[in-house]
Amino acid sequence: MTEHNKGILLESGTNELEIVTFSIGKNLFSINVMKVKEIIHSSYVTGIPETHPAVEGVLQVRGEIIPVIDLAKALNIVPSVPKEESKFIIAELNEMKVVQAITLTDITLKEKPKLSI
Image (cartoon, rainbow, N blue to C red; front, side):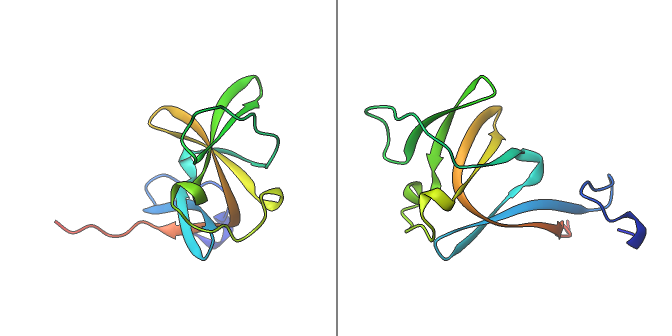
C-alpha cells in the first residue's frame, strides 16, 4: 500500500488482509475484519436455561437477538481479564450473526500469504 493511501479500508487487488486480533488467556487469535460487524463493550446478557456451558445467553443489539458465546469456555482457556473489561465482537459467520466475548488487543493489517501451485 502506498504511503499516502494508508487508511482503514484496503484497495482491492492488493493481496492484503485486515484482521482483528484478540487474546483469550495467553493465546492470540484473529478474525477477518470482513466478518466483523461491530465491536462493543460487554453488556447485560440474558441467560438461557439448559444450553451448552459456553453459551452465555442472548444479547439484543438494535432490535436483533444474537447468541453470545464465551470463547474462553468453548476453548477451555482461563480468561486473562474479568468479564467487565471484556469486549463483544459481533461477527457474521456462515450467514449467522454471533457475539463472541473476548479481550480485544489490536486491529492489525496483515498481508495474504503467497500461494504456489
